[in-house]
Image (tube, rainbow, N blue to C red; front, side):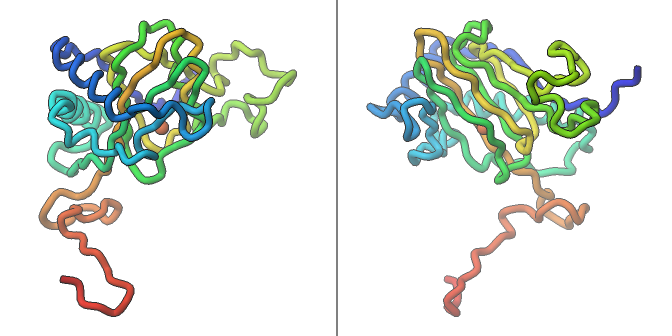
Length: 233
Ligand SMILES: [Fe+2]
């Protein structure tokens, strides 16, 4: 059997200084404050919906941003992007905190190209809520929708027809995946708070002549457009 067109997800175990980790952990708790849900009880608290979307500008996250940059470079290289052919920007970054019983529903990030998640805790068992990645193509199901139906002709363990793949949270692990990939965070069935930090990245042309019509020009060349007829300052 030929298995073609794999989805590439980077999974890297970082080795941060324990003090750096502890500081970021505490800062994340501080950012959330007394809130617990988003806004429903069963939904994890996500900082992007509460004005905490610039984690990458926090001095406490500088070490993580540096590691993210290195890993993004490796990932893009492995995907086949030529060195120096892209500029990468962090568009936003935010903490996600799941109390026991909370989850994040299925979604994707249409505002970005590449997304990342870093786990501040998690024991690798999946109990605190695994990241569920949904099969974006599912061409092998032959009949559209067959892989997610119940009591259908597909075996539940049909590897070539997996409707999703779960990655358990593990402290210190960094994942990179395409932003348009549907994903969710499963319910936290542990007794502990689950903490992670998400990043949305955008790819553009580097500064200088644009070498690809598909890439946006570098963001520093963008200007706001007034819609009231006024000259922009
Ligand atoms: Fe997400």
